[in-house]
Image 1 (cartoon, helix red, strand yellow):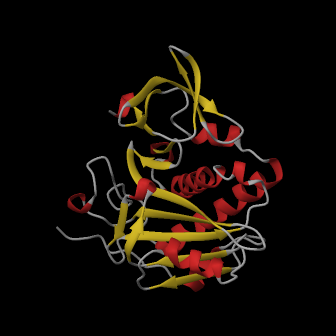
Image 2 (cartoon, rainbow, N blue to C red):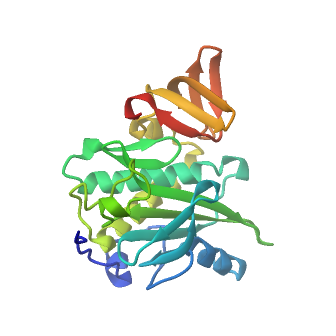
Length: 265
């Protein structure tokens, strides 16, 4: 089975597409690395300031949530990390991953033949036709002059069906979406910049998030741990971005948990 050929990311093309006033003053593209999150974390510890973005054509030692492995073949996925110094208190930083999910879903919806097929599942899984196309991981880096955040994401671009990590995953090529990685990365950075700026001013983007998230109004199972699963209906997110679920025992709020939509199985 042949792989769809992708137009690989180019730093100059990405920067030329960034909107005036965008958060990101520096965008670097590397051929290969272990982890873009680890690289930006190291740069943050060395004093790098907010606004750096790093893109890798190949990632060999990436991590997802719960330390799940995220490895991308060269050119088949986008590995992107962003270095930030958020103004809100750390208690509110859970929003960063949600903002990243909103940014990716907004960027892909602009490029998709059918934008309605691009959705979000709480907290930040980006889906196309109910299948996952993007994973996101945020980390905190302590510094004497204030903590930094590194937000990393991976988007499946040209992975074939036999290369997908699970049957419930997909790629942009399989969904008929452009594989121009410079265009995709620039779109994500532009949308993230707008959401990030608004969040820092307002402290919450509940309405915008709930409008994009298919978990709202859906029948859900929230897997908190191996022994604890809660079922109910997604009702919204609170001021901190935590999921609110209407259950038989009343409204419950979740900061973590794997969400399964009943209609997606």
